[in-house]
Amino acid sequence: MIIGTAPRIRQGFERAWSVLVALFFWDLAVTIFYFISPFRAPALPLTIFGTALALVLGVRVNSAYQRWWEARILWGAMVNASRSFARAVLAFLPEEEEAQALGRELVLRQVAYVHTLRRQLRRLETGGDIHRILGPGDHPELARRNPANGVLEGSGRRVAGLVRRGWIDTIQQGRIEAVLVDMANAQGGMERIKNTPLPAQYRAFPQFFTRLFCILLPIGLVETLGAATPIGSAVAGFMYLAVLQIGDDLVDPFGNSVHDLPLDSITTVIEADLYESIDLPPPAPVEPVDGVLW
Image (cartoon, rainbow, N blue to C red; front, side, top):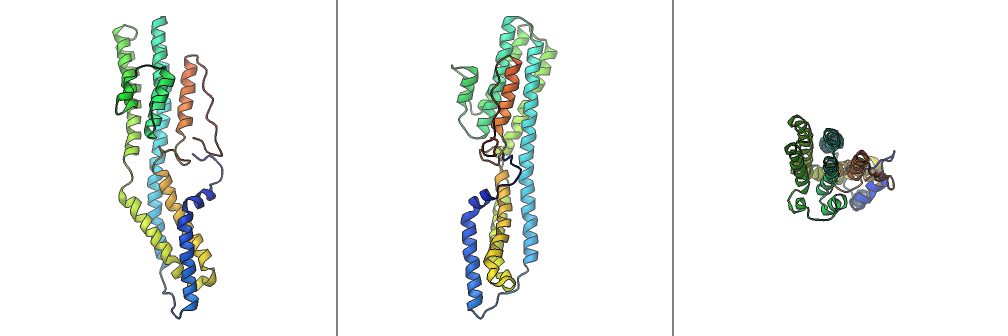
C-alpha cells in the first residue's frame, strides 16, 4: 500500500507508457493529415462522450474501491478477533503448567493462522510460516486444500479438548468458539473477494470505451487545438487511462503489488501483540520501503 502523501504519477506513466506512445503517434498522424488534406474533421460531441465515459469509469472505480475497503475491514476484524482469542484462552485456563503450555500453543497457532491466511490469499506457498512458528514436524494442515481453515479447525478441536479435561467449562468454550466463528466469517469474506472478480462487463466495456474515446479525441480536438493536438489529446487521454488503471489496481486487494493491502504489516502487528501476551520477544514492525508498506 502506498503511504506517501502524493500519488505516484510516474508509476502511472510506467504502466501505461505503451498505450500513451501509441496514442501520441495516432494524435500526430491525425494532426498531420488535418494540415495536408482538404478534408476537415467532423464535429464530434466529445463533451457527451467524455461525460458518459467518466460516469462509467466512476462506477467501476467505486466498485473496485468498495472491494478494497471491505477487505481492509475484514482484516481489521481479524486483528481484533486474534487479540480476543489470545486474551480469552490465557485468561480462562488454570495456572497449571500443562494447561498454560496448551494455551501458549493455541496462541502460536493463531499467529500461524493469520500468516497462513495471508500467504494463501496471495497465492503463495504456505508451509514456511507454519514451520517457523509451530516448529518442524508433521503439520496435516499443509496437506489440505485450504491450509488456513485447517489451522483454525485444529485450534477448535484443541479448545474442545480443554473442556474434556476440565480446564474450561462449556460457557467459556462458547465464548472462545464465538471468536473462532468471527475469524471463520472474516476468512470467508476475504475468500469471496479473492475468488469473485468484477463481472466481465465491468472490465471489458470500460477498457473498450476508454480506448475508443482516445481514438476519437484528436479528431474532435484538431479543429480547436491545431498543432497542439498531440499534446492536448495525449494529456486528456492519459487522465482517462489513469482512472481506468485505478480500477485495475484496486480490484484485487489481496495481491502483492504496491496498491494492495499491507498484509505483511497487519499480520506482523498480530504476531507482535500475541507474542507479547505469552512473553515472547515481538518481531520488528514492517517498515515502508520507498514509500510502500507491504
